[in-house]
Amino acid sequence: MNASTRSLVPAAAPVSGLKPRHFLLRSRAQLTPVAALRPRAGLGESSHPPAMRPPIPSLLPAGIRLAAAGLLAGAGLAAAPTRTPELTEGPFYTFNPNNTLPALPPGDRDNDLTRRSGGAAPAKGESFLLSGVVRDLDGRPVPGVTVELWQTDDGGAYYHSGDSRADRRDRDFQFYGESVSDAQGRYSFRTVQPGLYTGRIRHFHFKVKQGGTAVLTSQFIFEAERAQFARDGVTSRLSGAALEALVLSPQRGTDSAGQPAWLARKDIVIDPAARSRGSREKSRGREP
Ligand SMILES: [Fe+2]
Figure (spheres, rainbow, N blue to C red):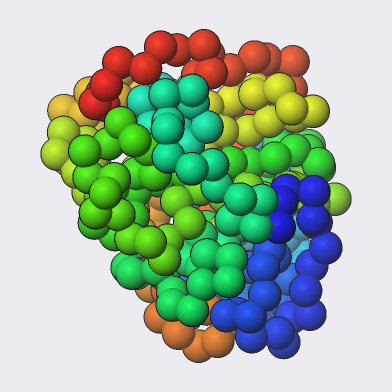
């Protein structure tokens, strides 16, 4: 099912039988593990001020909301959000013209990358639930934009003919997905932790499109590899708030079916008037 499908499924629906959907955002039950695992859930990863946060009242118990709001107000955190920085698209964007693999069918472009349309088996790897809010430079949620996610499978292969590992790829993995931000700007994906390949730190690629135009191309990286950020050919030029805007701090938790999963939240701040450089970059073979 493609990105135009925005409807949310009933919260009690089994994870394995439905796609697409907003995984973390539909039910309190799915969000609870995040809050439980992370005392500052809803506040910690993003640099956004409290007034610009997602609808916290729907995500956190009242006591935590009040405490969080007080802490942030006391800290004077009222600055504008940090725009999510651009990073290279890389050579293996699923839809670049150099990819001669069969085009992914519409049914394999939804926000559950762990299952192929009609597939019997789930993808290999550790389940990973990624979600957040797309915001503009004033911190306002941006509904109706498409967040594209593409990544390696558990073995470090992309769905791209230019990747020498492509013929060994996990045939049960979707490699690419789309999530259309809802009325509150929320996006979400169910996927697996991206596998490593030589020359790069672990990362997700993502792109944000508004009205079919790419306004941001970038990559999420992982807190656990912070010691390698400065040596990575793509992330080494970033520092400070720009770098932190891309760092995920996944926590162990469970999905709505009670199965183990990594949970990570990260807001994406776009300039809707911008045009992403990513789609204009030439593919140069292997990253970086
Ligand atoms: Fe990559």
